[in-house]
Length: 256
Image (cartoon, rainbow, N blue to C red; front, side, top):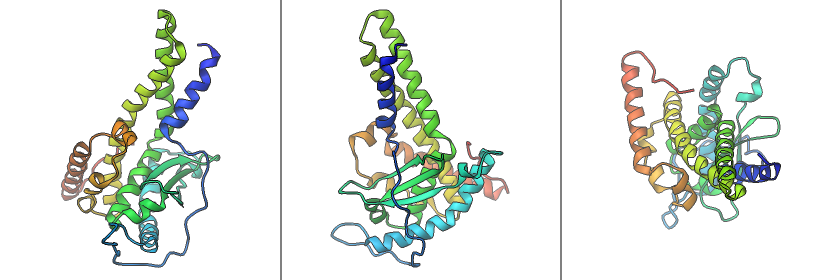
């Protein structure tokens, strides 16, 4: 594979997978406890302080569950592998968003912007988003995604070279095709595992499921996420599986 195509692969990985290059400052550590969110009628969002209170409350409760699952999935690895760091960042006018990334030491980072903190209406919704993003991390979707995107780019570039087509254009197309395919697969994996994690922490996905249909419908989200009805159907099925397993003194299985 000619070396000039490497920058294209790298660009596809970074921009397509939307991994963050750096972290912002961590969220406040002493967040006051609140019980009932205040939703602003004209905007449908809560005041930022209320959202930060819920963020801190849910983070404290769900983090031990996710850490335990992560350690079981990655035995023998360093503590850094499962030392989740949570960050709340300014959104600068962006829509509600949550991301997963890693810092330079390999520590997993979960980032919410202010718009998402204000957008989520209940502790159950915060738990669903947090558990979903942590499930991406535990399943190592960053490394797996990079591998599949690179494989798609190389495969397309090799075929183009044999056929005398533009190798760089083919690499971009192959990377994007792989990205779309594996993004959807990874989202469904994170939905399943996230549902189980939030239920293990005592949260109710039935109270959060409408979140998926309320999220802004950007082009990128529609292209790289499964349809909302499919995701909602899966979450409900996993919740039913979890409850049935509990009645039988078993536990719904995590897939990592």
